[in-house]
Image 1 (cartoon, rainbow, N blue to C red):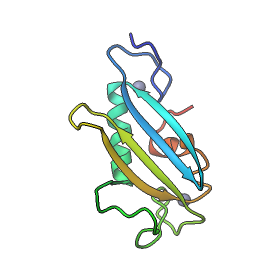
Image 2: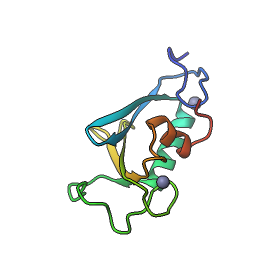
Image 3: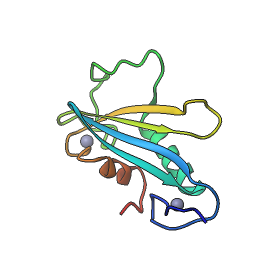
Image 4: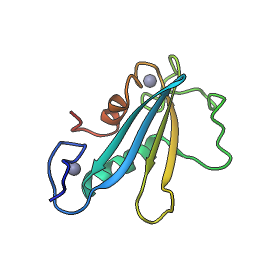
Amino acid sequence: MALFPCSVGGHRYPGRAQHAYLNVVNGASTDRMHLRLCEGHFAEVVGSALAHLDVVTENTQFEQPRMGGLCVLRGEALVGRRMVFFTWYDGNTDGGTAAYGEVCVDCGASAKAVLSAFVDGVD
Ligand SMILES: [Zn+2]
Ligand SMILES: [Zn+2]
């Protein structure tokens, strides 16, 4: 059994944990969450993150709000602006994969709030 419970649902599970990190940047401070996930929830969280966020490439520009200035969680105009970074390790990509998006101040109140918008079952 995994030493730590899954970060989604809090259940214990056989096999090794898969790791992901969710960071919500608020000016100079960052709310970080280290996720230890079972295989099923890892696939669910990564799938949802990919549906909301864009994979970071060398051309990604973080300084300017992106075209449209929409909240990636609500799809409506941003009210304030926080930057969300999600990084995960699937064993296929050295150094993991990062994805990025922008959310409102309220939608991005914490990394946990963003995670619960991605997937049900977050305490
Ligand atoms: Zn799980
Ligand atoms: Zn929002």
